[in-house]
Image 1 (cartoon, rainbow, N blue to C red):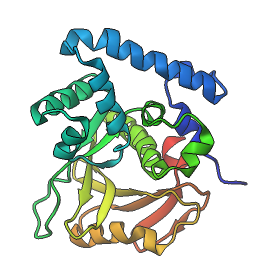
Image 2 (spheres, rainbow, N blue to C red; image 1 turned 120 degrees about the vertical axis):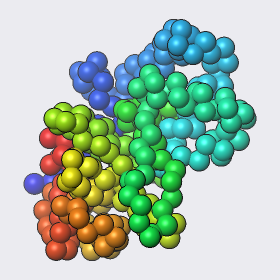
Image 3 (spheres, one colour; image 1 turned 180 degrees about the vertical axis):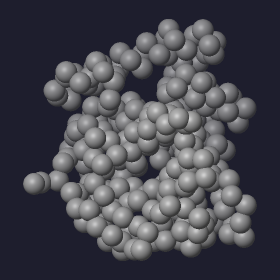
Image 4 (cartoon, helix red, strand yellow; image 1 turned 90 degrees about the vertical axis):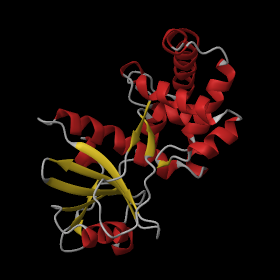
Length: 249
């Protein structure tokens, strides 16, 4: 059995209308119409936005930051917007469910943690389109496929978390020393750390962030490393590497 190539799914996205379209040009035209409709019709009412070109520019730069820590000051500077304006427009995107902020895991421990959230677009097809990758070969050569892969996993974890009764909560974890875990899933008193790696051969080095989290938080159930391969293996006493399809189906 070969590894399942997730990149075409990431580029296409998960909107129902796209599932019957088999190639990249129709995806591109569909997303262009979607973004135009959002800016020219949907956004007019809730936000009363008049500078639509500036708003699209913010969306494009935010797409390149998906699955990264949000630096709002940097984003405002790059878009040439004031910080209050950038803040309002980020809130609009979140209110209209186009992207989300995942907050840091709120456990007060001795480890010095970074308190900024990570940001994720709610559909990878939208993020890839806004980032300007219209051809699959361009996306494969880009710097961001790993971020888009993590964004793809975020979408499914977000859905799974909200299917639970009561809903689970998603967090991220990052220390000032650079140790990080993509997601922390909290369900009641149970906690699972989840890392995402764009590799088909996960190794012990890929689990460094999970090991650091488990050492700092001994109460979690364990750690899960999601990867692009097909292998299921233990990477530690409480860390298991599994294919991404185990979460997404």
